[in-house]
Image 1 (cartoon, protein in one colour):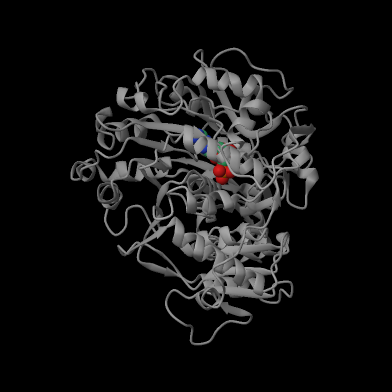
Image 2 (cartoon, protein in one colour; image 1 turned 180 degrees about the horizontal axis):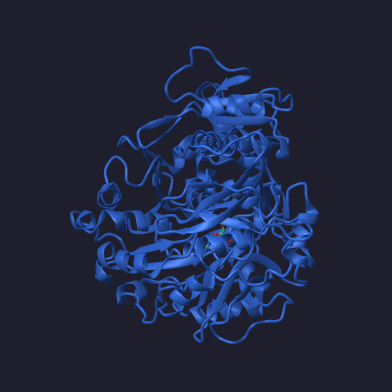
Length: 634
Ligand code: AMP
């Protein structure tokens, strides 16, 4: 939940940073206003034009149909996103171009051309078929950030199976819940992941998660450390499956609206929200923004620092860059390990031109100081983009000065989106002045507005309200897997518009400032975590009676989690109890959801109807006015 103090601080920011002339000159979209207007005035013509740049097995009969709140794009069209990501490049001159450059924390490097990647995806797709995976089946992927993780995703899409990637930082409870919700018959995992030189035992976590789940028929394991001494139950070896399968696997013909993937994200309830994207519209929309917002050129090297476990990794490590025929760098592990200069070393070594990263990463680099960027030649870097959480003006300015050479070679911009939108909706493009503290303007296709709780548009500049989307674009999610009512609720809490859950304001120039969430969703280091999920993990510990968690501003991570706990009768607060509860949440949800602080309370403040008042806890914690507390229990 947003606090006024944060907004006041940002509103004081004035001044603009103009994009370097060379960046403006080469920008793909020269007349942004005209492109935006075309996309809003006649969205069907606009998106049809983009769709025609890609390959379809059969063209669509109708571009768009809206049966509020559900909608369809490219009706009757037949396609497969992997045909555009792989096959197309085998005949257009990209066959021997690097598709992926993968880097390990230990300095290892693996390069995959489009030709080689297509072969490997085909092999694995055939392997999945041999295990009985068919069109429409769900497959959970719990993999380290690796080429094999991306290959697993593409192989599912190739045969029309629906993948659900679970971030490898999640733990047993979170993984098991997602396997169950998706009713996955196959799980794909790795033996270990690497982070800061440590091994993360993914296979062990996976083994516990599938224990007793009859619905899971096979667990495919990428044994990167070599063959296991004792394979787990239902284990199939990833490399062996590949080796035994053929390199020919034509892409399954999919309807535009057939599901491509489910990606679970956090909402306001304890149950994760299975956001579902489709083959056709998602391919068209994410590709458009890759080309026009990231502005990646044919001979550029592009680096995305996200993970395949998040939507940014789905859209902008795997799918859109491949559809566009780009060369993408991705790297397993921490951005400051094995040394604080490794981020810059990577830019220099690979001649990276465009970067997609998160404010948390920049704040971490800023903390190490400018001596590191000054040691490296960063002149290849043209465009550095950020998303995931508010980009604070301090981090922006430091990055501009020390990583972008004060605009001599590079530029930094912000963009806003979420798992549900598949691609960016607000942003500062290569041709627009940057306004620190503001994310930018609505991007083509995105009709955005700011409204009050009754749905009335807020037209007054710099006045906060709820950020909404008023018209669906092709890459917008289609439903919540298995829960259409939850999807409908997003479109009906305020009738006629989709509620993003964020609070924003718009200035007199039409630039938006996204200040944070309007609901009980937290954003820790750019990762979305539901208060309710952490609370239910806490109360699942036998010593806990009740729990409430809030987000507390943090210089590095944006927000940290603070938990308030009342213990059951006979349990005493202690340091050991704090440690035990943290360990428990880690086991249930994973390290990213562990509260940094825990406080024991005899009771928690509640409304008369029994709802815990997180708002009051937060106000007390931050020394702020709690606002309206008339519904508080006496
Ligand atoms: P996720 O669905 O995990 O990608 O998280 C999406 C949420 O992250 C949004 O609803 C926002 O709360 C936040 N977010 C993403 N990008 C930005 C940004 N550029 N500025 C502020 N908040 C952002």
